[in-house]
Image (cartoon, rainbow, N blue to C red; front, side):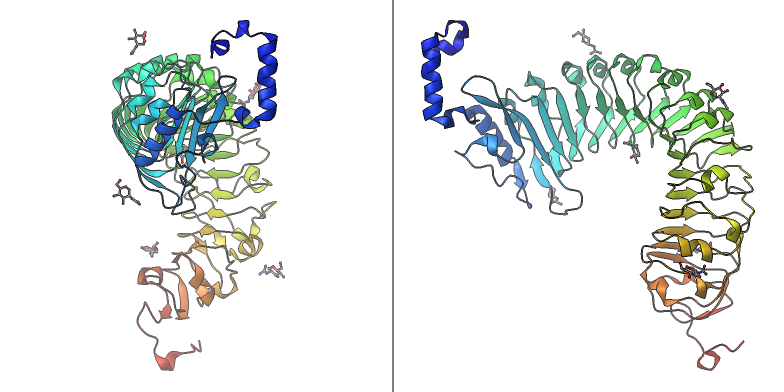
Length: 494
Ligand SMILES: *[C@@H]1O[C@H](CO)[C@@H](O)[C@H](O)[C@H]1NC(C)=O
Ligand SMILES: *[C@@H]1O[C@H](CO)[C@@H](O)[C@H](O)[C@H]1NC(C)=O
Ligand SMILES: *[C@@H]1O[C@H](CO)[C@@H](O)[C@H](O)[C@H]1NC(C)=O
Ligand SMILES: *[C@@H]1O[C@H](CO)[C@@H](O)[C@H](O)[C@H]1NC(C)=O
Ligand SMILES: *[C@@H]1O[C@H](CO)[C@@H](O)[C@H](O)[C@H]1NC(C)=O
Ligand SMILES: *[C@@H]1O[C@H](CO)[C@@H](O)[C@H](O)[C@H]1NC(C)=O
């Protein structure tokens, strides 16, 4: 013990003795659980009331806690290790993969903890864990997708050593405490998907090391403060699904060199889309959907050569749409603005990697048979509803092998439905209010949603669970869920 307290005084002889000991008793060198860590972790386990997938099965008293699932240790002295990270996460695709209960304050005994990761455990409840304030080495907090509730503590700024704070996907309420401006070492702040209210704090401008700021899906309101002058590292900004109003603040332009992801969708933002967005050379995702933007899409967008995902849908944007120089757009949604595109733009048709194309209500007047996308291999979603598209989708659906959704209601399509290939992957098909004729094939039974109402279809409806409104308004469709077919009319001769 003496030697450990003053390492400079360790004599060579002691060293040799110690090394020999290690040679004969190698378990001395193995990570061994410190009693404080063990009791803290076992108290955490006691706070868990349900663990149906056995996440904490290996957590047994008198076994080495450094070997327990989700627990990592680091050597802090020559002979001793301490728990430095606790990482438990549920798997989204496994219904049993959750924990119920509360987070025991006894975790404060884990005095060397630098990271706590309790992610997707779904059913952990209780208030903000105050014991975090008393963990002197804590740097990373990810308590995500659980059911923690109540207000965030006003003194949250005391956690000023933190490099990452994520409380995303809980049920926190109230405002974001002012003191958050003292967390100046944060590179990630994620408070999305809670029920936080109030404005976005001016004080956030002090968090100059942020690479990621996400506050989406809360009830934040007011204007987005003009504070973006000082975020040289910010790559991801997600403020979507809130109640922000006013214009996109001018200082957002300072994020141009590095910002890759900008989501301001689903708010009440107004004004024009600023020219400066065209200078965001690193931008790969831009979502401004469901706001109240007016005016044109700036011609500077022609310089967004790396953009993969762009959603400008549900605004009041007008023509002309700029010529884009993007090599390959992956997903595009321009639906429901005031565009009159006429054609599907060439930069879309030529994309080798597009999987989602939504151009509903875009004033497209073309014959669908004449649209020859360069690559159809990746197409999952195509929404061309509410245009003036004529002709037939048969050729297109014959080339899109993995299509999941095709929406084309309220157009002028005219084709025999019997010729339409329904691939196995297809889940959603809406052809309502066109001029589709022929019979409804049995292949539609595998779909999740179907609408072929208001066309010129005829004959017996194959057996499915779809409602009558999916079939009404046709010339002579019959059978459940519509009135039964008259025997003598089957098969229809003419
Ligand atoms: C979640 O926890 C609550 C109480 O802690 C419990 O009543 C409920 O059954 C749990 N839910 C699930 C899905 O286990
Ligand atoms: C930030 O920390 C300083 C120094 O600890 C303190 O004086 C100040 O009140 C804190 N700010 C907020 C908003 O809590
Ligand atoms: C941004 O928020 C939206 C809405 O919750 C979500 O769908 C999207 O995945 C988020 N993006 C990132 C990168 O977190
Ligand atoms: C694209 O960027 C170049 C160089 O920065 C600039 O000269 C040009 O005007 C920009 N194009 C548009 C359409 O803004
Ligand atoms: C559908 O594709 C197959 C082969 O890929 C081809 O033989 C057939 O003629 C096509 N049908 C239509 C209607 O385009
Ligand atoms: C089908 O479309 C029609 C008209 O577009 C609509 O009125 C009806 O509610 C839709 N039915 C279903 C099941 O989606």
